Length: 339
Picture 1 (cartoon, rainbow, N blue to C red):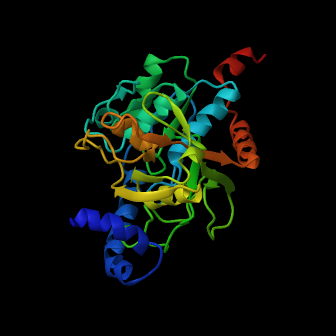
Picture 2: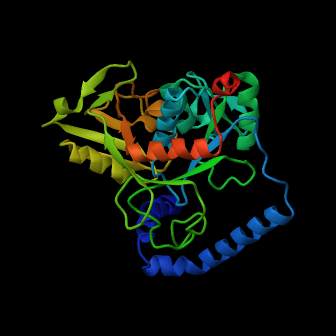
Picture 3: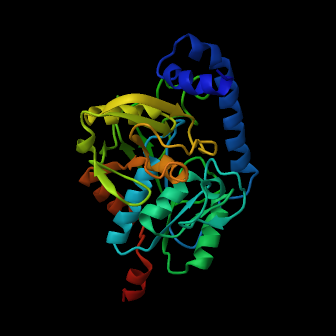
């Protein structure tokens, strides 16, 4: 087993408590923390000011390594904003892509060019999505090509000090802040607590404050041809599951909770590209996440992607709308219609 694969398997578990492996890595966490603080001070006093775009920017992110539900929340935010009269666009760095340029995400885009999460968001929401090495560049390019866009949602940009934002949303899952240590001894990308506008918990943890979201799998899977299959129809069968996520076991657990019998599970690194995945017929029904499907379907068109549904409590949306109102953030057409 390679060292990266070993770390991918064991580090997330080590981050949940202050055990031997975490303690061994603690001196490196001190170095990481010192460098983080130095960089923050240098940017604050010597670096350029955060760049502001001509439309409001909402940032969705988290403070721990690995997925916590940022992408599902970003898509839910897009739908909510549309229901309030906004015309949103999405910007991202496109983690996992090989290219470093600034480009639009299209239905035909390759994940190696734009990243798997931006590709999924474009396919699901059909709003303009752009990626760039610097998120502010993605924002400028998007607004130039889509002048009707009047608000941007930034996927995974909580640590991006170069991008000025109007509202920060931090997503937390059941891990909370883990053992409370910085990388690599713990899961924290930066010290917590930090000032954010809203905190959304997608799992039960010991942290106080914030709002709760229900996270569950849809009752169906869909293949590359758009055909839907009820998960209940797979009950009693042995099926396989694959996940290229930061925490693939969470996906497998949700499948088991749905009553499915998993014969084989394949836990792959986050943003796995499936480039060398065999095109031979799979012996059993193969289940995957929507994020993996945008890459896996090129090799296994009959693999079933099971959507992940994220439903924040109504109080979260109320707090979001109130926070935007307090900052006088209104859709462009609303502003132009005001006396």
